[in-house]
Every structure is written in structure tokens, then in C-alpha cells.
Length: 210
Image 1 (tube, rainbow, N blue to C red):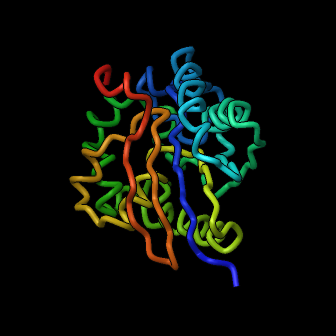
Image 2 (image 1 turned 60 degrees about the vertical axis):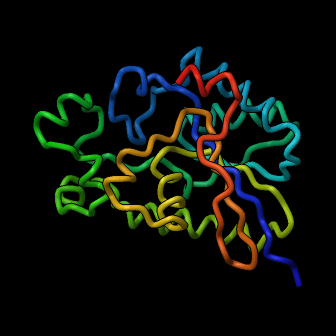
């Protein structure tokens, strides 16, 4: 019987055009990595080399897939696209600037974690839905990849969803938690028991810069 001990490395994509412009891009095309984002992906790829990754899965969204391919080249693997790692659908807020959103609708980010009715009303994927698909991904990988290290390249809220599952923070704490671009959130799944290993792990010089 295959042992269920899997190390999961969740990697947020590098800095992208929408991050700089403060746009709610959601799943919209046309928001690639910036030059800095490419550099971040290359550096985290070097950082990952000693970790003996056996498989890479990534979100189909351009900025995440671009990050995954840069890292895959660094560690001599291929990346496999999986829809469960995709960005949240921002519904009617897609393409909106952060300032406009806050002015018209208040703190939608916090309301997202609180499960406020405005989320579904505007066609935004719910946080519970994000949790469900990420847990399905993790459970599936746990069954397939016992005693392996798996890299999942995705977005901030899918990463927050797995953190939320393990640590169960308040919505306010989730809102205040920033998952840095091209940083690692590391979890161990041992016999279906999750434990946190690290959050925002990245190249040492970035800690003082950010």
C-alpha cells in the first residue's frame, strides 16, 4: 500500500501586469509576468533545485503557467496544467481597478473571506468553492504521489484556501495575510493529516526588500 506522505509546495506566480496596475484580472487573458516577475520566477526556480521535486502542476492562467514553465526549466521537469489550480472568477468585478471597487462596493476582499452575499450576487467564485477544488487537487495528488514532493503553481486565494483549511484563521486574518509573488507555502500531508511547514518562503534577499 502506498504511503500517504506528500510534501506540497504551493508557489504563487511571479509579479504580473495586473499586480502592478492593481487590476482585478481574475481569469482574463493579457496579464503576463512583468520583467521583475520573470526574475522572481527564475530565482525561485534556483531556490527549488535542491528540493527534489517530482511533479509540477500549474494553473492555466497565463501568469501562473509562465511562472511554472520558467521553474520547470530550472528543475528539468515539465509542467502539467490543471484547472483546479486556476484563479478565482471575479465575475462582474473583472477588469475593475482596486480603488474603484473599494469606492463602489467596500472591502470586497474581506467580504469574500466572510462569505458575504455580494460575492455570489456578482458572480464571484466563493471561497468555499476555491477550498473544495484545491482540497480535491491535494487529495488526488496524495493518492498518486506518495513519498514525493509536488509543486503546485497557482494564485493567492487558492493558496490562502489551503492555509485556511489547516490553520482556520479568522476572515480578517486571511484578508491581512499577503502571499508574496513567487513565494512558497509548504505543507506536509502525512496519512491525511496536514501540517504547515512554511509560508512566504523565498530567496533570502527578498525579505528585506518586501
